Image (tube, rainbow, N blue to C red):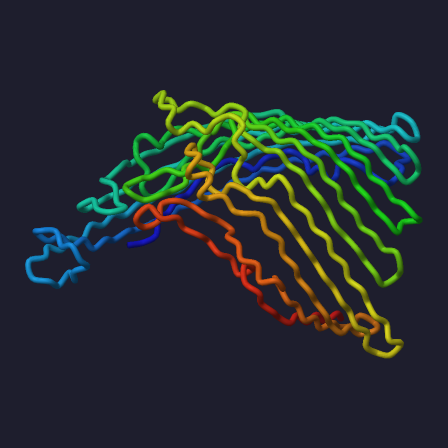
Length: 417
C-alpha cells in the first residue's frame, strides 16, 4: 500500500519583513524610496493511485498467514484521485527611508495583495479498503481575498557605530484549501487568511574598529487565524490537515555576534530565546472540544532556547599552502514535534534537548585558488530525532532520524578561477 499523501494548497507565504533588516550601521545622507509590483500564476495537477491487497479468512487467523492459504479470500481495493489548483496573485508594494535629522530616520512601507485560489478534486474508488475512502467528488472550490499590510519604524544613531531601532509590521498569509488523496466532504472548507502584528526593538553595534559586531533584538508577534498543520486520522491513516488553529503569540530576544580579533581568526555565534504558545485555540465548527489545544501550550518545533558558537583559524606558513582549523557547536532545548490536543501525545512526541559539535581541518592555497577541507559532523555521535509522530503500527510512534544523528565524515573541495 502506498504511503499516505497530504497536499495543502495555499496562498503566498507570510509577508512580515525580516527582522534582521530592521536596523542599520550606516549613516544615511539622503531619503530614499522604492516601489514595485508583480503578478504570478501557478497551476498544478496531480494523479495519485493507491492499491491494496486484502486477505481475509474464517475464522480469523491468530498468527501471520500467507494470502495463498486455502480458504483465504483475496480482494484488491483501489482508488485513483485527480486534484490540483490554480493560484493567481497580484501585489503592489513600496518602502521609503526618510531622514528627519542626520541621526534620526523614519521607515514606512505598504503592500497591497490580491489572491485568487481555485482547486478541484475527484476520487474514484473500487471497493474501499485500508487507507482508501469511498469515491468523492468531483469537487471544485474557489476563494479570493485582498489585503493591505506594511511596516513602520524609526532608527536612531546612538553613536556613529551604534544604531537603535523600533519597528511595527503587519504581515499576511493568503487563504488555502486542503486538497489531498482522501479528501471528504468535511474537509472542503476554506482556510482563512492569517495575519500577524509584529513589534521589534533592537540595537546594532560595530565596536573596536570593526573587529566586533554585536546585534541585540527583542520582539513580540501576535498571529490571528494561525494556519497550522494538525494531525488527523482519515480512512485509518494519519495525515496532517491544514487548519485555522486560532490565535497564537511569540516573544523573545536574540543576540548575534561576529568577532575578528586578529586577521586570520573568526568567531561567530548567536543565542535566541523564544516563547511561542497558544493564546486561544479555535473551537471546530461542530462544537467538539476534544481537539482543542489548551491555552499556553508550546507551539510545535519551537524550542525555547537555541544557540551556536563557532570559529575558524587560518595558519599561514609563508609558502604556497596554508592550513585551516574550524569548530562549530550548536544547542537547542526540547521541542514538541506533534502539535496535538492530547497532553500524552505531546509528551510522547517531544524531541529532547541536544547539542552537536562539528570539526574541520584543511589545506588552502595561499592565494585562495583552491581549498580542500576534511569535515567530521556530529563528533560526539549524539542521537536525536528530527520528527516524532503518532500513527505507527499498533499505536506506536514514528521517529524520523536524520543523517546528522550519526557521526560521519567527508571531504569538500573548492576551486576558484
